[in-house]
Length: 126
Image (cartoon, rainbow, N blue to C red; front, side, top):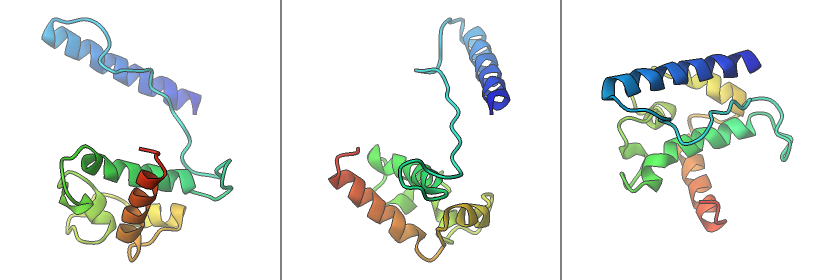
């Protein structure tokens, strides 16, 4: 895990240096130091396998909606959300692997995403 974090840091540093050279600028391109967190395995709070991965998956798909860019999660064409609900012909994501690791399934993925969205808004998490 530490080696992965180190290599990711090298990649982002190289990217920043290239962009700064291209734009004749200096300084960081990213707001904070990149962190690596294991998103599978047992969750300390719930004790469930894959629950943090589930949260991350829904969070990523909700970002365009939260930013006010779309009215529905399905409307953001750059998202993998439509692949996970089975309405996108082009499958570049390994949906079966996500469902295996999290216990989610294609039949309830959309409903789960919207239910979590509503629950988190009410709970003041956003």
